[in-house]
Image 1 (cartoon, rainbow, N blue to C red):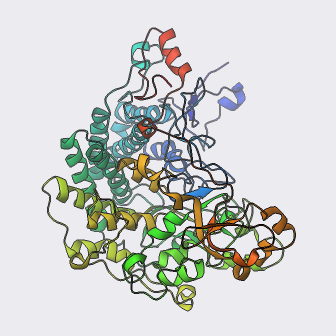
Image 2 (cartoon, one colour):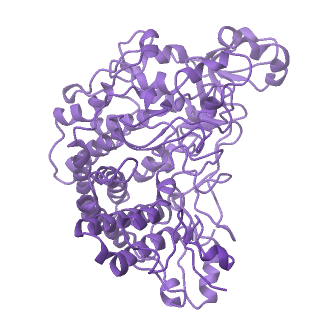
Image 3 (cartoon, one colour):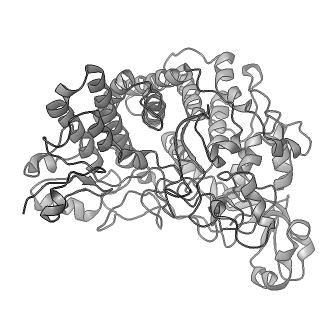
Length: 623
């Protein structure tokens, strides 16, 4: 039988598929054939080969009920969220077998914090692309096209190595396809993290310089590359800084974070002209000036389920906690402890919606919902119409229910870029003799975000824009960490408010070296509480009938003086206070090893069986 190798990449490996002669004799129109005479001929072939990258790296709302790399249902592990029962435990022992790269048990390995398998299939895909461009395609395309596609390949290689490094630290670096018979290379041990990230740095610099400014709708361009580069370089630069590693590298990476962000910020096509809610609930993000890359959904061809989990009806078993609520700034630009806004010290969701930064009202319902484990329900990823079905009998229409949703997903946003930019500039100013952050810098970043337009629904509720951040009058937050400057604290707060349920928070507290602190439920008991709830007034059904029976000796609130009151079936009038998440218990004890993931013991044994050594992730050697 004639054999043609189809290089069809799954998330696990490059697989090889054979069929009968009649099928193989036909040239495919939808997938690529790795044969010199039939593929790698021109830009059309290169573009087809690259199509598989997009759902892997710009996942958006994923598809169907899939969770990996997905907002709301995937990124739910951080100090921002709570769940009923014991909080999500950290992995405490190295797995014997299987794929592992999550720091927390009981969840899909790609849903936690941009976690990653110990797998290099996507690296191989990019190295194959680079190899074939050089050996086959180059004579058939212009120098500009050659540079562009080489930049695309290097960009995606850099992106994948970033994911591997944030998961495992040191990893083997491959800059070319590895032959299956080359065992010493295939079974190479880890290369130092810094050396790998230097290669990532080089790939990103090349890609920014060579990828086209415009390669068509929904295709990676110079600005997508620069925006993602600002994310990658901020992460690694601040990791090197706050984890006391190579400070020369930290400075180098942070400077690229700034210059990459400058590329995007220098393009007048991007601006804060969208309402916050419209970013996530729109059915057409084309032309939205805040969106640098998005994933388009179609009612007939590609749908998802994220809007359905934002509709107020479906359960949100992991939800916003009181720690996150308290971090939202009031609309006078001050923390609640010293705000002059009327009712700033009230924590019922209706008052919070009016007194806090507008992103609070655009992220959460302003009524309590017991469909949320914390009584505060996120509606960030649905349009305004979709939030009205909580009061309508029957199932919501397909766009708001099940896995038939089709609102577009922003994958790379301008807010990421400007907040990366201002944070990198501040780290450089504080630690590497960089230029001091100016009021103009704040106006181009944090204050530009705060000046987003408000939609009619928010205005009707009394929501107001938050006052600008002023260098001459920085807030004095009594909750600020002693090792964080007032300006840096506000920069970090801005990220926390902006990116709730997106890919950011756990990555942030990892790179800042704050996981051991912030993820300690005992130290931060508000991490297991919800908002202030007046059950007799706001949710009386919890105190009567079937729900009262279920809530007896389970439903608890914490009074302002710290007293815990438990519902006993007769004291409903006293059930007013901060909602205690049901049966909440602190997560297990954990150490610094959780900053990185272990590799399974069977993988280490596989190296041994072939005569090689794979070093275990530091801290996991004896677990």
